[in-house]
Image (cartoon, rainbow, N blue to C red; front, side, top):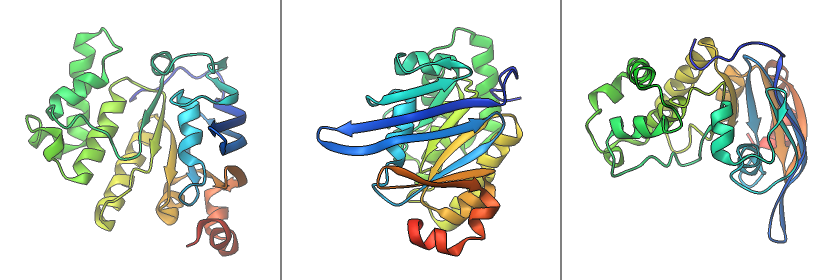
Length: 244
C-alpha cells in the first residue's frame, strides 16, 4: 500500500482548540477536527474562512496555539521537517513546484528526508505509473507544465516522503472542470491504496462526492461536521456557509 502506516488506533489525527493569528488578525479560532485512519476528510469553506490556516497550523508552517496529536503523539512542538518524518505531508495552495527543476528532480526533492535510494527509485516509478503524463514530461522543467500537470507533480512529490496522512490545499484551484474530475479520481486512488487524506476545497460537490466526512469552516470557526452524504443532502447548509 502507498504510504500506509501500521494500524494501532482508528484516530490518526486529532486537533483540539487550534488558533492562528497573523498579528492582530484572528484567522482561526479554537478549531477542533479529527481524521481516522483510511478516511478522506474534506475541509470546506469560502475564501478567507481559515482553511489554509488550519492545515498550515497542523503542518507547522505557521505558529498555532492548541493541540495537534498525530499517530497518538503530540507534535505541536516539532518542526515541519520532523512532522514530515513522522508521516505528515502537505501540498500547498498554488502547487509551488520548483519551476526551474525537471519533473524528475522535483520528485527526488520530495524524498529529501529519506535515505533508501532503492525505495526512492521504486516510488518514483510508482507515481509515474499513477500520473502517466509525468512520465512523458519527466525531463521537462516543472514551470513549463500545465496547471493540472503541476498539481499532479505536487501530489506525487508530497507522496515521495511516504506520508500516512496527506493534506491537500485546494487541489482543484484554477483547473478546468474536466481536469478537476480527473484530479479527484487520482485522489480517490490514493485513498484506495491506503493513504489517509485531509482535503481543503472550494469545489463543494466534487469534494463531497469523494469524501467520507466533512467539516465546514467559516470566519475561522468550525460551523458543522458530518458524513459527506448528509452534507450533500442539506442545501440550506451549503447555501448558508459555502455559497453554492
